[in-house]
Length: 191
Length: 416
Image 1 (cartoon, rainbow over the protein chains, first blue to last red):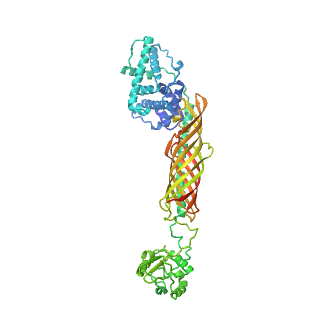
Image 2: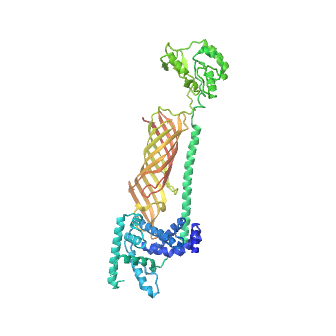
Image 3: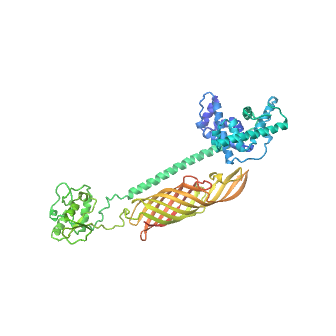
């Protein structure tokens, strides 16, 4: 924890060594957030790097009111910046759908057989979310996973609250359809 | 069958936290370079903003210094060359006395240029008000006055031209003894010449016209004026590469609000040529293909410009004057054409787009200029006006921060 305090302090003081330490420590965490929003794997790294640039520019404004949970505060704040950066990227492309497959090498192969099934399930669920149209994907990620309210989503995406709710409903319906189709194909029992 | 409900939402959240992804593409050097660029940009933009503020401050300081230099308070120029002032004291018998008492009065002698000049000069130096009806001859011209007064007392006043007839001599006396007239050392002496009975004539002294003397513009000038202006224009985006010069031509309409201030507007038609690198070009309205990144753009526009300016005149001579002008302009784009290069998946492409009446940028540009004007013909003025137009916001389809400079030359005439 003291290490983290020192790193954050160093980042506020624009010390490159501390910035690099923070970057390397939380790159994976940020990558997993942005990967849910951005379809193309090779684009995710660019967005994450842009997010870190924004983070280092605004680190002097980072405040953690709960003294003992600095890392939690930091991760929540970092998550917000990464989500905003990902949304900016989607809006830059006018929320246009992207095409292409998901290469298998992006997934971590877990040798632990106990969690293998669960990992496969999580991988499938996230893959299904990524295949949603960008507008639905953004709303679903922001509302269900990242905990934004519909008014916050509407402000961020430049849409109305009604559209946000409608997109969420459609996203869930879409996912349900895909998952049902998968269930029929693989014959997996209900969890 | 799995259904997406609250349990599913929880499952999704778990999946988002624990799904097995292999993060790749971590490149600290790239981030460090971007941070350096950001720092340089913010330092440069701060420096640019500070520079703009200093430029504005310098412009206004310069204008105020020039105004102070040329502003005419009417104190030090009057009577300098008042050689033809003539006057006759209203009571010649009293004129033989010398200066007594504390006050001073204007003792004037007819027909003598030298004495009048000396008198006026000596009047001006001590700026004290003169008590009423005191006839005191000023020390500086005393000897000469004595001689001239002797001449005057033996002379009959000549018939004078009626300038301002007064109905009674009592009224004339009141004019003479008016404390405002007598006490104001700034005013030239008032002449009473010989007049028919019951009527006095007051002849205002003539002051010679000195071309070098700085004059206030006459309030009797027509208040409205109009004219034509034309000139070359050079435009640049963020002081990048400058392309070929464009042009401006149009009409200006002005309204004088007093001796120095005026408001101007007009309608100009112009062409601007410019170049920019991709980062300054807002591609939102360009509808480039997905994942395309603008590298550079080269373009021109044809547009109407509507300026609204305030003008301050200074350094006025008999035939010429200087002015400073500032205000805001609106750009109404009629045609824009761009040739651009963009990158998509690391491949460079050329593109070309052309827009008609694509944008209206109201009050988006600040005008600054200092000009020189000279009388031409009967009532006309020739005008030379170098200008600088600074962007307050982006203009055109690409929201480009366009800075323009050039010189306008033209002629204006009073119209009403």
